[in-house]
Image (cartoon, rainbow, N blue to C red; front, side):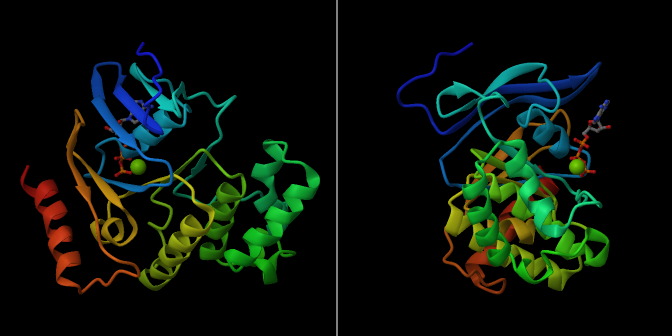
Length: 251
Ligand SMILES: Nc1ncnc2c1ncn2[C@@H]1O[C@H](COP(=O)(O)OP(=O)(O)OP(=O)(O)O)[C@@H](O)[C@H]1O
Ligand SMILES: [Mg+2]
């Protein structure tokens, strides 16, 4: 195992490999992420995006390799790694407010701070008006906002999002992407956002990691240096979108 060094990157993924019996899904993946970066991961269907997030979050063990956070091996007992799944995951018996607070309860955030953060987050994600409703009384997009708000509220060391808006129609998706950028800018989280939607990756990310087919490696690391708010019709936006598309299509 490599030693932590004074010059360690904020997030370091080193030689990560994950196999299910004979099937090698992730094949010796290494990359670094700076604190506060919003990185998007795109790749073909079934290449191992969810496996990758599950391994990073320590939900499943890696076959080989390590993840380091701030110079220490990632450990769910000492690091706060938040995970927003593709499907909404609210607890039906809890009001919206208590669903958003849930992550902070698990992390034992003191009561006063919890309430302050809760009010701020509910406001930021536009859930303040329905804070006292139950999940079955709100729409699917509202429910996904609960998951995003719950994750940001815990002030995570690393926030993992696995295609959180994949099920939503395009208008809602645009809306929630802007909301995510606002949250990320205000709360300064370090975010890894998985999507198969290249346009979404170019709109959101500061950097895009492009995955290959299995056994999966990183075949591209593209910086998206465009001003925000980004314009889908800007020639530079279209150029980067094409670069990522060609990488997935032809390599
Ligand atoms: N627990 C498991 N046991 C065996 N094989 C698995 C397991 N989990 C995932 N796989 C396999 O690993 C590969 C990657 O699956 P994964 O769900 O990570 O891909 P993905 O890129 O997230 O796919 P999608 O684009 O459909 O979301 C697939 O071939 C899948 O069958
Ligand atoms: Mg997946």
